[in-house]
Image (spheres, rainbow, N blue to C red):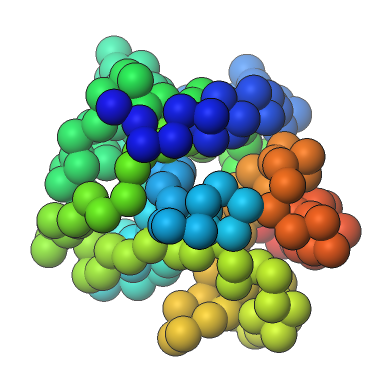
Length: 221
């Protein structure tokens, strides 16, 4: 049972599928990510959180060591939704039911140096009650933690930093707090999510909008 069913309904009603796939016929493979909301005792307005992971460092993983959401490649014959739930269970040990599911809110075709790639990401969201413990898979996840959306109300956490991408260094916007730095694709997914949640009354002075979270330079990611 959901602890706050009104929060579930409010979040579910705010999300709308946004397709950013300029060349869908080019897409040959998909990945699915799962953004899992929870809350603390402050409630929806001030206590909303998301589950995040830091990927294990592996030579065969281009996203090695990055902060991300549970997720991974969609297997042949598998739906993007099933992949999102499967990866959540495999990576952080949470086996969620359909009653937690808020919806799919983003299809994003990746690009590199301004060119659309044959790979896309499907982003999904769920809502669960607080205090569920993570069981990270050591092969894939170094760390799993709850990311409080209150960090986004502190403008000192929103920075421009230099990162290496395909062997070249460039500045990108990021969210940096308590030793965690979220950038790249995860940042882009958060940005889209917050633009959809702009009507949710978190903090009226700092609504999550496209102007609040700067976009990536065109063609960089």
